[in-house]
Length: 379
Image 1 (tube, one colour):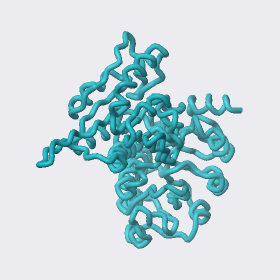
Image 2: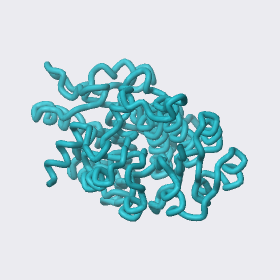
Image 3: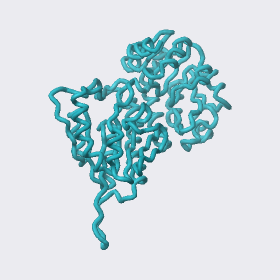
Image 4: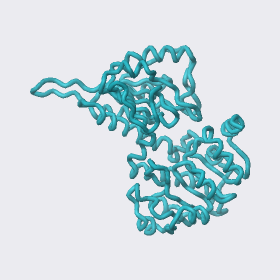
């Protein structure tokens, strides 16, 4: 079987779906690997690095698509890439299947077997394949670093001969992987950190990192979804949450929002009024910008200035750390492929629960029920 890695073509994308170490793993497992020339340059990987690992370098994307049985990418395919994917081949990348329904239909029509890294099951066995966690961990870290560079203040408490400097105040909304990474980074920089989440069970994790947990009292399991994800909350919960956050947002120097619900628009947590209540010079780092944002004033991939308050909607924060982001993503993908590939039969085990859990089209059919419902709803 031939694995193909084309160059990522989105303007802000710096990552690549394979690194020399994973190329060696694939070749040891019996795969051939073909990589488009220049695919790794933005992650500091040269063509020679890939060649030394055993890959064949091809001159352009069409050569890779035409000669490969399975395409490995970071982003979902563009229209041009969809046209190049071979009928009956396999494909894997990040893919928001409930959002990108027209692309799902195109892959179905070409009888492609497609897997999404967004759909990797949240199980112990699949942890090393969890690319969402590896990339959002980076995003949470980088959001605080960028936020610290936006504000005109020190982050830590400082006692100097000229007087005492109070620590910056950081509020993190959402204590999943990205939120916990942001909390840890903000604490390491010496700031005062508060955090909120719709799932009460994360309180212990938040407090173990040295942050104060802002808890919205609720009699039900509002916000607790399957697999550790958050889910949509009730109107009563949203009202209580907004009242609690309004005061804390106004007092914060940096607000990091991380609330995402799989396959849904990001919930609005920060209203226009909350942004306008913040002090000039403060900043909102919106990690949910890709799905519309947790702040009502977020514009994806734009830095908006609202009366001196910055709202940063940078979408691909993981891509700003391309070396480590590519290392982690490539290892997630290789763990997935090597787990599901049967060396003896030279085919993927489509009975495996991790493979079936992340597969959304196969043999001309949409096999993931959530994706199927989304596609049918948009027809």
